[in-house]
Amino acid sequence: MHVQDPIFPTDNDWGIPTLRLDLQGCPVVPPVCSWGSVARTAHMPGTWVFYTEDRRFGGLLRDAGQLFVTGCNSAAEPNITLYDDTPWAVACHAVYRKRLCARLWQEEGIRVLVDLNVPERHSRLNLAGVPGGWRAYATRGYHARPDDLEREVRLADEWSGGNATVLVVGGGERVREQCLGLPGAVWVADHMAQFRARKGTP
Image 1 (cartoon, rainbow, N blue to C red):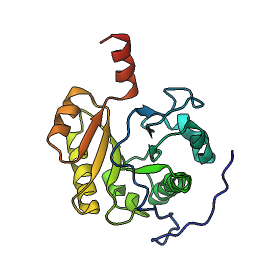
Image 2: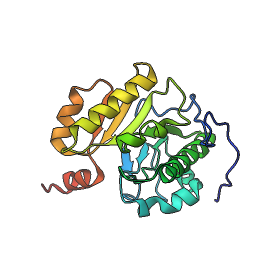
Image 3: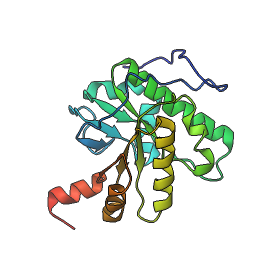
């Protein structure tokens, strides 16, 4: 089912859609699955995340309706890759695309977690269209970048008014332990770690 792009309300000068506060993805509903880790036609009642190669969700950015048939409760926004040297205009377009997907999903009753995994220089732009008081966020954990995770959790806490939930995906044992000391952080293993655990391999 292809979903046409409607005109949504916006709170910014760039037309980035504003999310609905009544459809936030917290508390996090398990299972948490990475897009592409299971068949897209399979029933998946939990939460989708997109901390994987951009090519795996390129079709979803073109047709957000692909998510509807999975029966999910919630989804983090697609994590479109940005870098420190990504031009502002390109970053703005990426934020527009992922926020449009998220708002389309909300119109079908899917709860949304705002993706925080962007370079620091784009972190404020990344909140365009996210209402103040928003509590549901997601990010990717990296064991070599603990300062980034702390910054993202602080930003979520500030934007939410002190009541944020941040789903942290992957990063291994070091990130899991770090999350224990970060209020509101909820850690889950990434899909490869989950796969190895099921197979009993290290």
